[in-house]
Amino acid sequence: MERYPAPPTQRAARIADQPKRHVAPRGGIVINGECRTSDESIYAIGECALWNGRIFGLVAPGYRMAKAVAAASAALSAALEVAWAAEDRFNRLLAERGIV
Image (cartoon, rainbow, N blue to C red; front, side, top):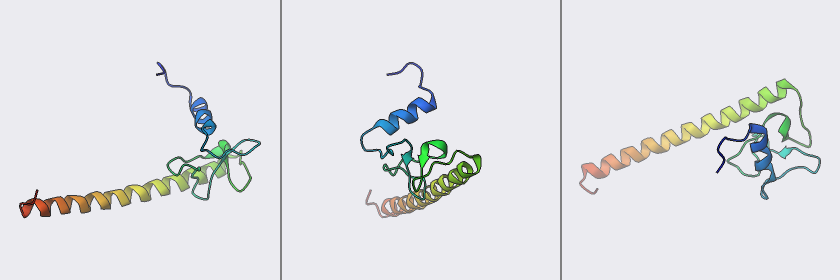
């Protein structure tokens, strides 16, 4: 266990070095159109991300990537809220009927 967390660049390098991550031969973590890596729970944006064989070293593409990740995260959050609300209603129904 590390006493102090590694800087973000070192943590990103560790993630990229893990065997199931797809990293291009000349560098860059391969992402899809939603900025997801080969591990669907991890996103990459900015200069570390390789999309369609290109790395963008400019700020504007990084902002667009960040917006894509934020939108995907918001959609996931909304879907989880709906699922939790449905589960709460189901649990209340079971409790009302004395099943739980």
